[in-house]
Image (tube, rainbow, N blue to C red; front, top):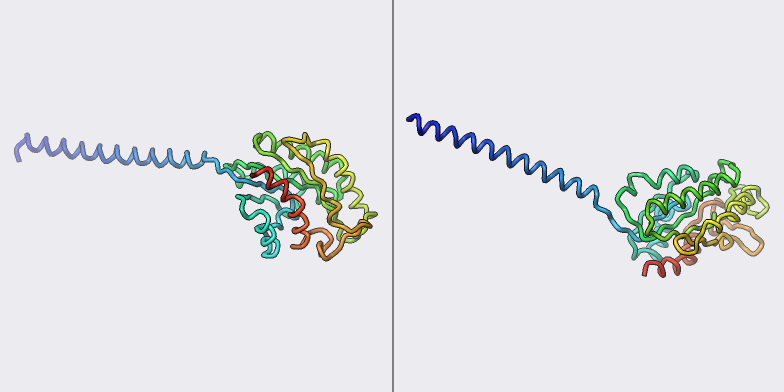
Length: 233
């Protein structure tokens, strides 16, 4: 092979190698860009559910899930309710990885049961927890409307309204309406729907006198469905 041809071959090889490296670098850059874009993509959902086990259990059993789908199955939903959490822990869950790239049209919040329940905190703790949660939700998703629910009645040891736990719940609920502005945050109190005219809770809808069964969730769904449908139409 003459010198001129040799140099030509070497030059072609180097150019091919550079082109290959350049192609790989471009592919890697495109992949990184696509990953970054995907990470920044915002997924619009219709309803974000926020709360403790009473919220979490909406979709935790086939019976409850059937009620959920019956009333809200047409909507795109995310449920970040979690059993056993306090209002402070609920506040932290608002910024959990599950909510990273979502944009809810409306948010349904019911929290405070555990603060004044098994944790035996004073009502002021749950009240302040609700206030901080609403503030964080408004900051995080300013375009979303919030349906803020009164804490539901509960006491696994006493179905009567005289129970100390239920009295603490009433104290919390007395303070919640003032957090509503009637537009971006709307308060709804359906507390009394879960007991009879004498204030007695029944195991037909709350077998453990804390968590609703499917019949209890039916009561909840019927009560809020008109508002949900109106907001999301």
